[in-house]
Length: 342
Image (cartoon, rainbow, N blue to C red; front, side, top):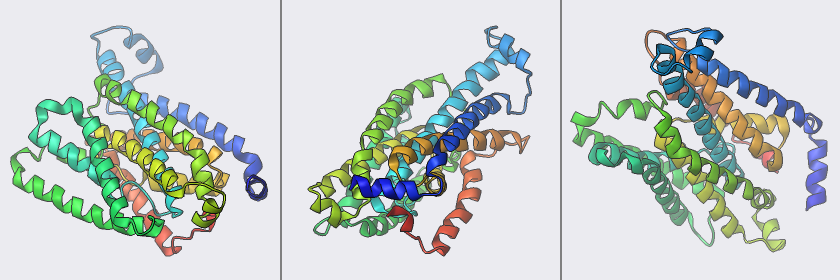
């Protein structure tokens, strides 16, 4: 198994250039974090920022330290979680169309989060846990309904799309029943990280680190699953146990992201697919690079969304939908080819 995988990876045209992609993403990460500090309706020089953040109570300190720095860091974490979730799901399903937003996992997290925000606003501290539970319950329902002497990836995707539609209807009904409280939820539904603070960062940082570590532990499982169910079983691998573990981890990642950013779509679809074309399908490289790529994409997209459309701030979820929608249609036009997953 290992030898055949090594041969395929060596044959990949970009196999010897992965370090270039990695360095490029690290540089883009640094540039994105810096760009996020400068982007906004108010412009500051480097000198203003360096001196201002040390002067507590100053305008620069309030804007840069209290608003922009936590926003940039949270944006990177959210992008990382969404990209990692999508990367795992695409590998588990062996389908480039798999994404936490498309198969309903993000919607499940979103529904519970909306219930907390509308009905129990005094318990917002439980939002990350509630979002994860919503995503987890949704994933388990999808998994159970897909079960037929196993849970084949094609059935999981189809059931997930159906569940996504049902959750969307439930969310709309909840908003209609509590129309007086909808205004505060709408920006969250559009997907964005405006208004986040250090408290939000402290709320998700440890969950995110834990989930990313679990994702990396799943690499060995997903590399076996990529060989196909029959081959994995012949090698003595417990296919359903590995698939369940990876779905739970991807669910945790999606729930963490949704709890603080709302429903931001397509990051988990676009990033892993593009990087798969560049670095191949070896998850030892694909997963960490997708984490970086997701963080970079969301940081840049958020900075653009809040600075290019002044005087309004466009929710980053809307901007990414303009990017991800056509890309999703492109994948469908290709016929959802799975050749890259072999």
